[in-house]
Image (cartoon, rainbow, N blue to C red; front, side):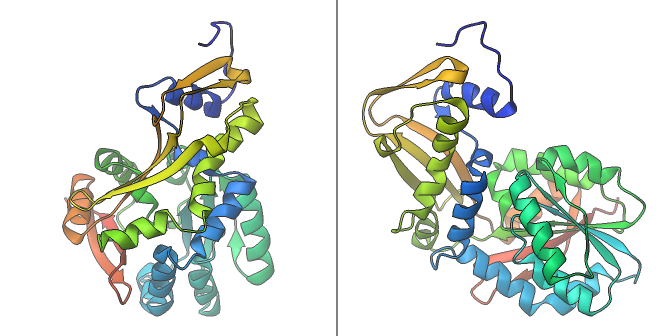
Length: 324
């Protein structure tokens, strides 16, 4: 148990304490990401099993002309915001095309990882020197308010990688409503949604045989050990992925292989695990057109257009504020 005098000094500490004292236990997937986690996720995106990256890459490359036309329909300057920008590999397809077409825009990537933003800014500055880039560190929810208060330019908000899938439907509706509230009538949202498909294809993407996704999932325990002086033995936890094709929900867990006690010094917290007890770390929701349309409608948005890869594994939808 935790001493009452222990002071929690960060959101990370508070969320770890809350999650590991809950029943059932959980930890947030947003804490997978640090310098090591960023590199592991880049490795995941390069895996042959992780179809999401190649699918969205294909969509952006095949449809960049039409996307550019939609984003720049009025030929006026606009700001291209990106939530969870990461390394920007896919986004650079659009940035390069917009730059070559002399489209008047500036790029405003947002990410929880300052390390990822620093690397992205350096690479964009080097590879695309004509693109104006202004980075913003923070969570999606923190930065949506900042987007709403931005200057008078028209806004296009990118949300790639099917990151919306990390939210359960009620949370997704709330998140989309928050986005809707910062939109003016001519602003756009361009968002990726992973589609329902063969369940084995999905399981392989989140539990590869080489163990990269396992290492990524366990990085949250590594961070607790490093940043909070914890003593998790990573070998005593199993990475486990499940997928329900009825609901379209994939879930990731860390499963304790034995009865054990973990101590986290900075929290003065003992965490007792029964054998085969779980820590839920992530959900990855999958969609179809009907579900996406329902989510948008509930949030006050309407679908303006959509683009798919050749296998229809993945779709990017364009949303606008619903006309009242």
